[in-house]
Image 1 (spheres, rainbow, N blue to C red):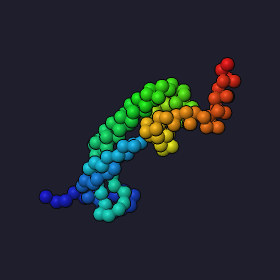
Image 2 (image 1 turned 90 degrees about the vertical axis):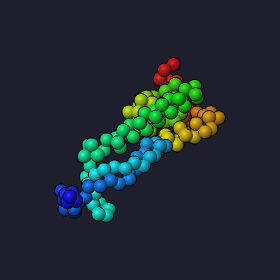
Image 3 (image 1 turned 30 degrees about the vertical axis):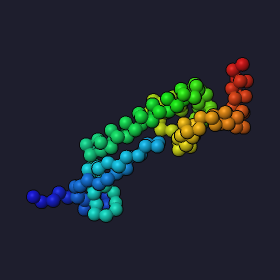
Image 4 (image 1 turned 180 degrees about the vertical axis):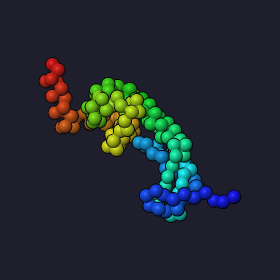
Length: 145
């Protein structure tokens, strides 16, 4: 049986059907999976079909949902509303709602703060007292007496 090949439509490079390890990452989670596709001999652009990426998509979706649950659980353990969490950790209430539903990934800075809060919840008061937070809190108090 002849080996299946195809030509990359942009680079003109010969691609062969194969499987390669690919890293899937979301927030603090990382997993290496084998992804089928059309690959060049060395480095270069590969071509994948939707079917090729099905496992990647599922792993990413699961990581996204797992982290969303973790964010919500942490917020509740710290006795914070979404509004308070958004003010303390940045991004605001809407951002926190999106983190907790998995609709939007938190920024790297937000992930770092979330992980710090999980390991050192006693530092919550320090975060609440930072100068930028005081300005935001004062503005919120003036806007909503």
